[in-house]
Amino acid sequence: MRLSRLTRPGVSGYCTCVASLHADASERVQPADSRAGAHAYFVLFGLFLVLAFSLVDRNILSILLVDIKAEFQVSDTAMGFLTGLAFAVTNAIAGIPLARLADRHSRTLLVTAGLAVWSALTALQGLASSFFVLALARVGVGIGEASSGPASHSLLSDLFSPSRRATAIAVYTMGGHFGVVIGMVVGGWLNENFGWRMALVAVGLPGMLVALIFALTMREPVRGLNEARQADEEQAPLREVVSYLWSKTTYRHLLFAGPLFVSAFYALNIWGPAFLIRVHGLSSAEVGLRLGPILGFGGAFGTLAGGYFCDRLGARDSRAYVVVPGIAGLLMLPCLMGFLFAEDVDVALACLAPMVFLGATFIGPLYTVALGLAKLRMRAMSSAVLHLGISIVAAGLVPQVIGILNDLLSGRFGDEAVRYSLGLIVLTNLWGAAHAFLASRSILGDLAAVRAEELAASPSD
Image 1: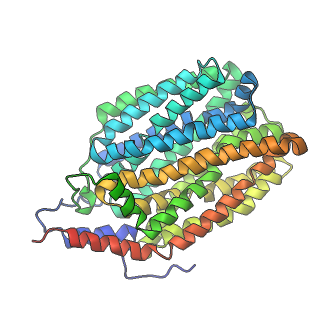
Image 2: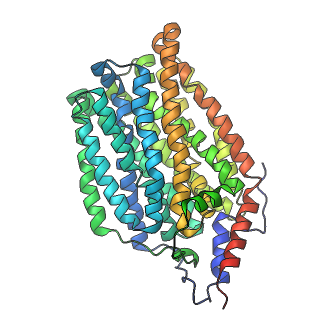
Image 3: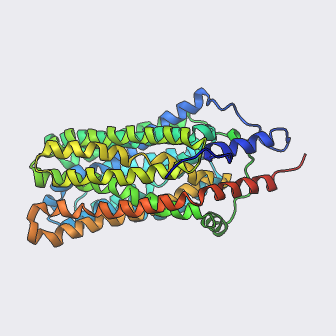
């Protein structure tokens, strides 16, 4: 799809247009310089660390999966529940009320409290006396982690101008990819030398210290400062917020495209280690050292590249924010097939690296569009509703379905059943790409409608 130069503003331009038209209105918040200040970058780094700890605590079970399964004598279906639905459903449900809090109260306080809670519960997982107790603690981790994502996206929207927002969100998201590296490398080493219980305790405790530092150093920014927009005094009722977001055709497509694209990452993060252990005979430490950097660094650089280039292209044509992820979603499929069916582990991992890079390009752009389609006191909810779909589909259903398929196919394929179960990613990516391309047909009109609503609601001189 050709991205032609348009006169209409893109995601990175339409808010700037609103700011320039109303900068002289005394009732409006005055816009900040488009160059973010030192504190903005300090908060960005802090949120980067928070997300890193989140992904360490969220994904470390994947590197421990084989040993936990052996100790508690459970099936792959049960482990799919533990690593998927037990976390994802509660994380998704808790995300909505916590996002409502973020849109109304202090976002920095919410992020701090959530980090402290989920870090403590991660450590407590190492003391679980049964699979049931471990699952309960995992549910608690899911609730705690629901506090950070929407609140962080809302904070970044107020700290960085629209023309830099996708890049800022991409940098923030890189923290999650580095968390994957740490979780797999450190978790694999700890598991090999001290066991899975000590691994969970060791990665959980440091997050509580980071929570304390975050609480003492982060300031709450003014909502709408970077766009000369003023937040409504009262928060709209939940039904009105959901109705407003659902009225945007582009947002509806994002609700499908985002979860379907993210499914590839969750499937590989959770079942990739088991694939390499069962099919290629690697140890958990070897998996951590070889798979962790690919998922982490490949995802980090892909996320940054996607945010940066979509900000550049989106300044001329906002369709880039959805077209680029759609193209990337298609290009990663041949790499996936190479990873799954290469007989040599080195070849398989070489195919995985470009797939991870391409698959990560969507994160900054899609969340930027979601935030751009929302009112100021709807931004955390806009992120949370998108996160709801990601949690249920990508983090919950897909890992669970793969676990079920492993058990169903094991009679025929044995340990190699996971190789065929992971082929589910092909379907999710094709479906996600279709919605990304469909969103390109409505994004210009939806952004123009948002701009018109801003102009109509602005106070007269």
